[in-house]
Amino acid sequence: MPYGFVVGDDTHQLGYERVDADPNAAVLLATMDATAGWSATIGLRAWEAQQLPLAAGQRLLDVGCGLGDAALTLATHLGEHGELVGIDASGQMIAAARQRAAGVRCRMRFSVGDAHRLEEPDNSFDAVRSERTLQWLRDPEGAVGEMARVARTGGLLSLIDSDWSTFSLDIGDGDTRRRVRQAMRVERARPHDIGGRLVDLVWASGLELVAETSAKQTWTEWDPDASPAPEGCFSMWSLADDLIDTGNLAPDARDAFVERIHAAARQGRFSMALTIFGVIARIPEAQR
Image 1 (tube, rainbow, N blue to C red):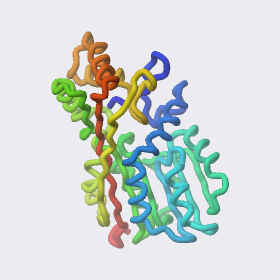
Image 2 (cartoon, rainbow, N blue to C red):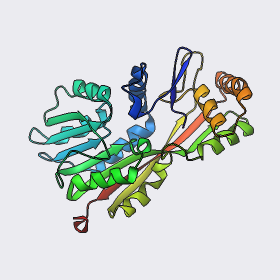
Image 3 (cartoon, one colour):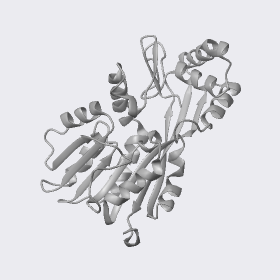
């Protein structure tokens, strides 16, 4: 899927598993901050905080913690005797999370780790969260199983993830909208539509569904001459490459496709939308 970011004239197809190896990793870290400011992200995190009644002395695990901002906000409820643990595949993400953790009262530990094989004991966390991480994993079902394993009986699991099959682009051109829609529905290297499958994933894992919700992120303004991509999103060059890869755009039509979108954005005829889903599940007694 087209999660590229433009630096100068280069487009980078970045994923969480490649952050540390990419010479422009700072671009992805900055984009993580931008996505934290999305209205959908803010709304879903507020909903999550209400659904996870964390209390002093409890333990919270964030799988795929990124820069740590969401977990650090939740950690304010844990008190000085609670503990926050965050893992991420990227050492650079972990380093940033540690820097941002200064001043937090509870005990905390941020480390590089694998969501498919958590190095944590069974039945050891009161709550486990994972936000926009499953879409990057080769085995999201296995990762959810690992999260359930380390959560205590009666503990809660919070999953928030995007469903890129819902992505739409509207520039007043039906052909462009159709091509983008068709490309985004193609399942390829990773579970890009996992957000819309979270409820099924909960049931398949033998967990109790507590709550579910969704939020739509929209972009209605973007100046392509001032920013290489809409806030926290990918470049249109990257999108064009994705359409080419899925057979929805001829290679020799790439430049015209991108310029058509840029022109529409300059004229105020640009909008994009993406739906992000959230679920809260409980670890049942039968899970043990």
